[in-house]
Length: 473
Image (cartoon, rainbow, N blue to C red; front, side, top):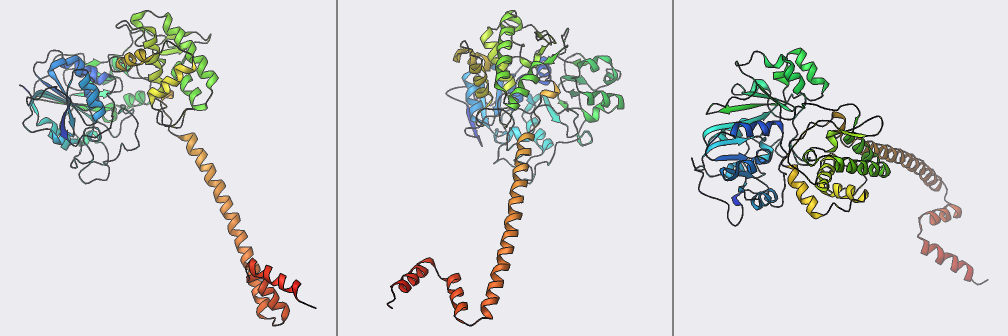
């Protein structure tokens, strides 16, 4: 089945409602996107990828793919890479547009725009499935997730739709699902939730695939993984191809886990502003990447590197891929780590810097002259082409706790000053009332002189003094 006949030409196809100057960012590959890619490997016909998370599959699908994003920056970037792009809200996609497969992996706040009508999570799925002529694949996030899947960049207006008529105030829970889920998403694993597998959630394979998160083990023991999953995959239309019951593309075959994750140390140094420590870590990281074989550098980011007790850096998970030049791999790793502190007050650089800007600062701090524009350009492309292991929980942003504590301290200090000034004003008011009472009870010249001194402006006092001095006799 063909789409609506519009193809890449002079620029992205603007549908209306596009967000000018906006960038959601095309998400790096995840276990979920890798699972969808495996499903689509043998699929035929056109594919509509809705939202920034699904858009990461566009390069693999080639001419079969059409991407729908709302931000013009994302649309222009994808179009420059030869991708057929529609830009605007999902509600603006023409009804005549039909595709053999439709994939949507993002919630309403990432595929609708502020001028879109109010649509909840399941209203959005109904709208998206109306464009599918074959198979429909959707991801629904869980409001009770033990470990929510990252929704791309952090933004101050990610909840712009909350409170608007028609929108959901929260993601759904399992009881809200209109149909049975095909698969569960558990952090870095996609697990079949069907009768073909005998209780896969209790198997050791699932335990090995789950990220290092203690709450997952508690959920497993309690038998509540289905209720506490990161989210669910809903599939309508054609049957899925046979895939492993537990799909975990980042599951390590061998790993070196002894030691402290480099990303944890680097982010901690950034949050405390210890630039000497930051410089030392970045220099050692660059030396580590230079020494690796070219086919292992693409995954050698700080989150996948540990620092041993002897200070030697080592791989946490051994993953081989395409050859990557050392400067590109270093830039890629710095960019990945900088994304954790970008947009917060937890770094010593200018607050307006994004992840790319902080990564450039880190490269300059370490004196990496080989990190030129070409290296950064290839590093940005690499970010969207490799699936990385899960971050260590202690590396995840802890919010703006230091800044909040600082503001609370300043607020308490200001409240103390206000209390002191209020007391001072009360005492002054009492003194003024006492003087007024004395004046009211005294009618002689002294009272009038005191009243004159208290109420007269300075110019009148000076004039009266001059007159008294110049008075003859």
